[in-house]
Image (tube, rainbow, N blue to C red):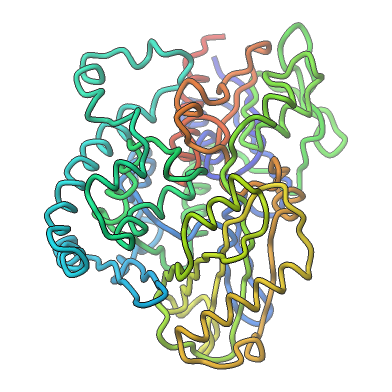
Length: 490
């Protein structure tokens, strides 16, 4: 039966859900509070001629993203050009810098130079990581995680030990490498899964394979090209997008969602998918219809928030790669500030993306586009003084690395983004930037449920539910919830 479906939010999971539910012949309407699609992956175009991706900038797991388009008879190349970055990124330590080359054989040589025998160890690590990637990204993450029965299969049972679900990532990496620098290089990707490496299951070594082996890419025109491409696919299936539309209330009748209040008007629907912040979505319901209490959310481990700067410079900045990680300080000190002490870091690590090194369309000729990101704890006090303080520190470290002086005087455009912006723009719990952490006790069935337990036609998708944070998981999340709705006969 053709259903009238509302999707709240047009982030990656919302657009994905729209495409899959519309493909099945449903009438699908996507409501977005902002003036453009993408959620955290929106884009800023400035009067000065700069184009900034507001959120995601690491194009990893290209095969998973490709799978979305294949499901609708397309390839990513039908919409945008992907550039393989070489080096994939550069990591700056206090005493040297380390480039991660595009070619895996060259990466093995790099490891061997730092630690004798590490090249062979990297090969062994990635062989195991490839297995986890193929099982994890093909089997594990496509399950709705309603209960553990879904994971009872001969294949999973046979390979359970090889997936290293009960080992923590830090100890796992230490089995392979002694060098602190190599350990840091291997641990850094899981920081954005939302917890310290010592609290993340070793299963997520699959991320190392999905990045370092499969490669790091950049879509010409910016990451926003992926948003536009997915939106076009969804629209071709029949999905209709509505912008500047804020969902203010979810109305219930006879234990079902009956309608949504959008910009003060009531609209009726048969099914509702919330791609918006899970906690916020539940506040739109009367308390008796919520899946979880406020106490439940307070006990959860969230991925970090971020201090972000979008900067345009009136000259070219030499010696910067497309992606650069400034890790001159200790990883654990910064991580403890995020997850244990929940305070601003005293010796921060940060990341710089300079897409104008690859793409001349994102900055005027002879100028540079920089995106600075520093992971921070959720819920901490955020003001302009603090933002400026950390900007000055980050600029000083960029100056030291590049040899440029007085970068502040060369800023042509500046915009900052932090905890209170994530809260106001996305209703993000605690101002989180990435969703719910993928810790062992917040994995699979232990994540917030995709389906409302009390209202049979309300579903949730995105980074606070299955399978977790990140662009590829969010796309998969939309597919899972779309398939669940498509199974419903009435």
